[in-house]
Amino acid sequence: MIRLQKALKGPALEVVRSRLLLPEVGPQVIATLRSRYGRPEHLISALIGNVRRMPAPCREKHDTGVAFGEAVRSMEDHMQAAGLRAHLTNPLLLQEIVERFQTSEQYSCARNQAFKRESCGSY
Image (tube, rainbow, N blue to C red):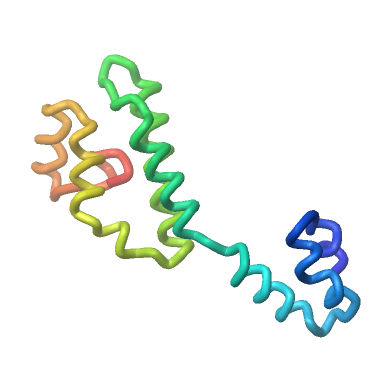
């Protein structure tokens, strides 16, 4: 409970301040904070936006492929952690990500069982 008291600031602290004195209500405090501030869809939306704004991976510039792969992996990890699995199988999102690759890389993905991690970044 002490860690929670130290971590909270501003409006989040004000919402639960009166309940922070009793350790046995810790789960209720966390549930209150999660229901009020836990909006994973906003985080997922921001991560998708990050991937969309990134430069397309380029075979000649290895760092663009690495950065793109890390951004996609982060997006995927957050989707799984938030339990928003429908995004992981969203055909429009998958198509948008694959289209960012050069045509030769897209064919490579198709040959290797469509979107398999080892051959196509995170998808």
